Length: 549
Image (cartoon, rainbow, N blue to C red; front, side):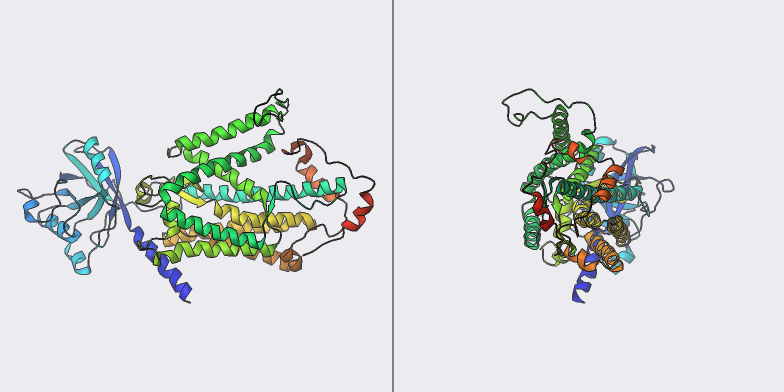
């Protein structure tokens, strides 16, 4: 019960910290075209109108050298029918806005060099003030002075946030498509492995280019995640560049491995480079492999150079992020549903702790996960961690203008549940089912993602997506295993085929999907596995006994 109350209180705290956003539309006096700037306001003073077209513009009285804390700061005649703009400091918000209102102002804009916060007061002060009060950043004030003439006007308003933005649909399709594609790819790799076993007459104890995670490795991984997150919180400006470099490196490999599935089917560029003694080229790779590698590295370098260009760099970042997730889902394998549950539940606890519990631990009262994910407000580098999918909001709102122009979804919210979906598809292959586990787990992930978006919309605060993705994905898979009476087998995992069956079903699957694994295998370069020798064949009967752990 205490944990539940802590979660609710933490969620309320995050909502309060976000405050209320508005828009200040500045223009030259007598003109309608201008520029929008972000403001923070508190509707308890005076609420702002919701529409720009139906609100009259008011002339701005610029007193920015002054802090407006005493009558001596007021010029003769006051601020009749104007919005006063003054500096923050030396007195309370209430004292400033009371002086402005008593001298005829229609509103007050306070310029702040610090992080913008909603201007607060008490109930009696709220009742006394009937003009709008808002904070605007010092950087925006400098831009206003450069862009507009001495006589300028402003409209203060707070447009209603759209109920659903189309960017939600875009990022939903990207996330679901990635986990479905990665899970399908992992199942195809399992089919390749089984075909190699039948052709060679030997069971492959170790899978090429894959890492099977054990409970001990999962515990170490979760502990490392906690350590890295705390270090990022403490030394963000130094470590952020290291993780940008790591993202460029891993995404290059992921792009190469993913695009090779398409390039290997192109009937050109199969010739090899001439003999040479250059590093990485001594093995004489195919020309198309070399060109693909150059393209993938160029994409990563281009993003690294222009990563802060919000107009188009997000497209490259999303492409690289999805490729990285696909590759991780291919090479990381979970041997059983038991291990899947351990990994997902451990990371769920990790996610909830660092989002909801850490505000009670940190001195600033901020969530470590939110601070690191969005970049600390006091960061000197102003860099963002790239381990997210980001899609720009397609509808205009004050929130978009102020500090959140993109809808974000962490790559971990795709890759971690994706490992479960990959296991479900491999399990389908091993028991020769009609992909029922794969399809149901993908649907469960989709439902969890919809729930996370809905809760973020209702609570108006960032949500730990794993809080919804993990239960939905695990429960859907578990229900299928119970309905099919395969819970024990699904829970412990299948190490080998239940019996030395013919691979006719597997071959039909590959034929239907036009898969030719030996031709397109990056590592083997089309070399078929060696046939079993006469000495090895008699051992085949004994070694193909089913093993279930």
